[in-house]
Figure 1 (tube, rainbow, N blue to C red):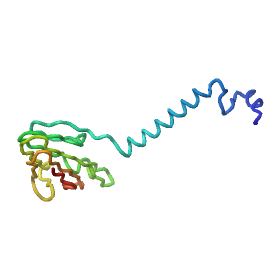
Figure 2 (figure 1 turned 180 degrees about the vertical axis):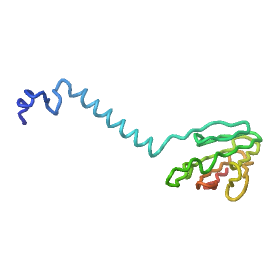
Figure 3 (figure 1 turned 30 degrees about the horizontal axis):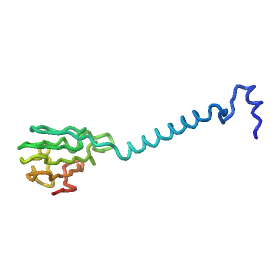
Length: 148
């Protein structure tokens, strides 16, 4: 056992809490560890922002998952976004998933002259089908097509 008496005179305290505070101390340490783990989970597996769209509109960069219904057109945001001084395009690598939850046809349109797999527009006409798109910093590409 270490003699901490010389440290008490200097205003230092022992590393381990006294027995009567041990339960609270362990609980606090567990909460700190849990918070750190949750922060890592949120960084590497972020929650997706899902919303329902029933009218034609343009998406923003906060849109991740779109649950669309009706005969509507969804316009994607700029695939490039802001370009930093090093030439890195802000929106490169962003993903969007669009699912047709209704019986209409969802037309997906690129921003301005940007394309989706070389086409100006793509559509999802079958209910419950979905497309996952990714930006390369210039245009959009279909990564996955989900069919029922």
